[in-house]
Every structure is written in structure tokens, then in C-alpha cells.
Length: 194
Image 1 (cartoon, rainbow, N blue to C red):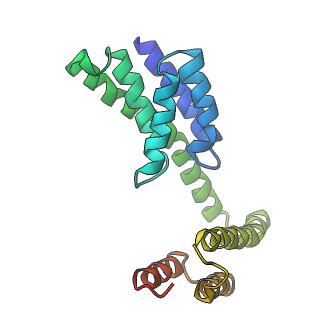
Image 2 (cartoon, one colour; image 1 turned 90 degrees about the vertical axis):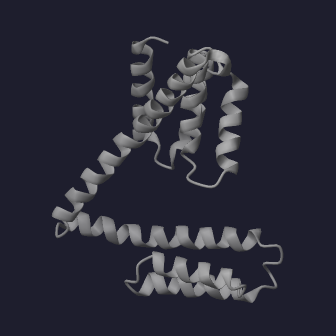
């Protein structure tokens, strides 16, 4: 790979960063098209293995991007037997893809939140926040529903339903930070109460 290829890789992943509204995994199809079919930098097996490994490992889902970059760099250096050059390019691949996927969306989020905070008294900003509240509550309820449904005997476990209802009411009717009910739920789960 030439330096222009690395720059092109950075630019493509930076563009995908701005499109990844539901997380980087939502752009995996285009990453596959770009890395496997268009440029042939990694194989189909490397692509699917990167996603499978990152989804199975603890940590954020975006780690699959680091594994994709690792594989691109490793292949550019001649594979695992390529010596220190291959391993250096693998690290470069991780750096290029992760910075590209994280930086643009982070800068955009930071700028938008600063603008919204600075103009928080505007009617449009207040209306947007008021409109987002029911959506956030609905997403919390949907997440709670999915988590309870995944439980082995959800219909008989009234404590999970009670916890979901209490968390929903707490978030809906108070200004308690979201991390408080999440932490309480984690403590109740660790104690074996739910």
C-alpha cells in the first residue's frame, strides 16, 4: 500500500464516521464493499472474523474497526511472516482506521452539543429536547423489554418487570441521571435479586 492508499483509507472511514448514526457497525456493509471487493486489501474471511471476534470480546463494538485496520496493515506488510514491518503496518492500520472512525463524529457531536448548550433558550432547541424525551424513554423501554425477554423465564420473573417499570418511571418523572438507575440495576443483578 502506498501513502495515498493510507490517506484514502482514512478519508473513507472518516466519511463513514459521519454516516454511522447507529454506531460503526451500521456501516459494516460499506466497509466490506470498500476493503474486500473494491480494493482487495483483506479477504472476506478476515472481514467476518474481525467482526465476529470483536462482537464476542468485551468492550465497545467499534473494536471491529481496529481489527479491520490491523488486517489491512498486516496484509500490506506481507502477512504475519512479514516481520517487524508487517507488525508496524498493522499498528498503523489500527491507528488510521480508529482515528478516522472516531474523530469526525466526536468533533461533530462536541460542536453540536456546545451549540445546543449555548442556545438552550431558543424555542427550536427546547422543542427538540422535549421531543427527544419520549423517544429516549421508548428506547429505554424497548431495551428493557429485550433484556427481560432474553431472560430464561421472563414471564414468571415479576422482579424484572418491576425493575423496568420503576426505572422507566424514575427516568420519565425525575431528573435523576441515567447512570443512577443503571448502577442500581447492576447492583441488584450482582446481588442476585433480579
